[in-house]
Length: 72
Image: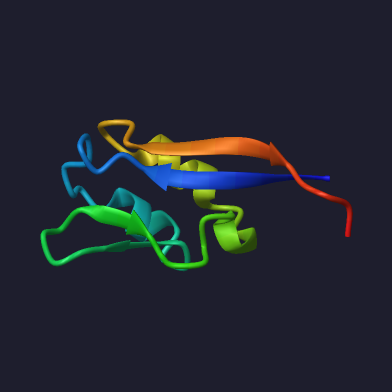
């Protein structure tokens, strides 16, 4: 069974917020306007929009990596 691991490169992020618009259940913006993954949502929280959020990022600050995980 595979899953995903999502991360935001905050050194690259410009705070456009496209990820928050695409997948608000996974992403938020901090007080400086930079995007971050909500605590506990690093696995995408089952959102089908995570890849769209990564594609929508104008500076490609979001990484969605495939990860193998133990069968349930």
